[in-house]
Length: 382
Image (tube, rainbow, N blue to C red; front, side, top):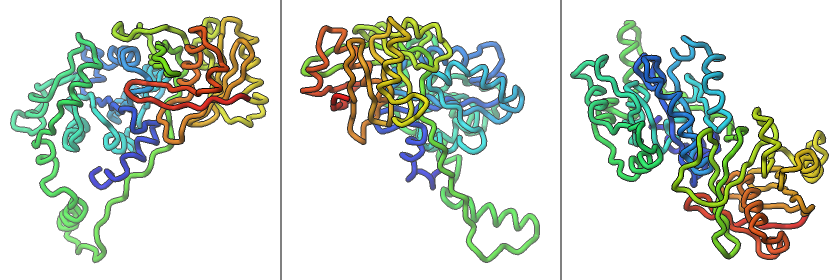
């Protein structure tokens, strides 16, 4: 993991996380008192709907690293069923054997328990918040015992976002985890090989001992297919603030603005399509199954009379939208924009719902703000 640090941004991009979004890893060992344990608290299943409701989907992404014994004990089908809604809200379910180290290197923070992966995160200097912290199964003289005893705790009775942001802002890496994980960082390969060959009574090979580099994970950006609660505010000068939440609970009360619902066309909650203000999907512009983005959008507006705007996302910075009045627009942000183009579509909807015209956008473009970051968006006719 130390050797893989130079590739951190690649691991983040593999999860669809750019510089303007935070990645939070949820880690659980397999003990009944763990974050995903069955000791009575059911903490992680309780946390997940709050995380997707309280944290803006375009400012945070969550990933779950579950111990292999959890997968083995319950079975992959059951794990995926339990986490189904969270996954459709954007949760990344990390491979427990081949992807957890890359996720830790990529993380901005970890919500974990007394397991070793949480301890490794602390050793990397990553901010850690303990959602479960049992001491009964830990040896009192073990380094992890002291870590669990003193690490910051998650308080499930309080708003979650404020706790996580305070953790990140005030974090000072404790020296203990790094010191006790390895007294000789970067030397594990030669020293462990020497130990193993000595134990076998065999001469050590002449060639240097080397570690396999961590592989680059597949590209798995978040694709929210649950209905999204969208809050928007017009800030003046063609700027619109957008905050999307994946529910199922109401968006935080401290966030104000006009509300609308945006729904992926392939949502499992198909009944919500009839209520959606914005319907969107992702695909290539030349997919023959849809004819063209403009044709797909026209079909959506014809099929769903309540829908005010249809948006077809054709790339990481571009989408085509069609309004109820018949205007077809292409929205394009810069190549470095770290936002889902469906956000731009919601901003256009908010603009039009406020009584403004699409002609104004053609002349001046649009600035879309998510959190503290603003994205200039060029608007052209199709």
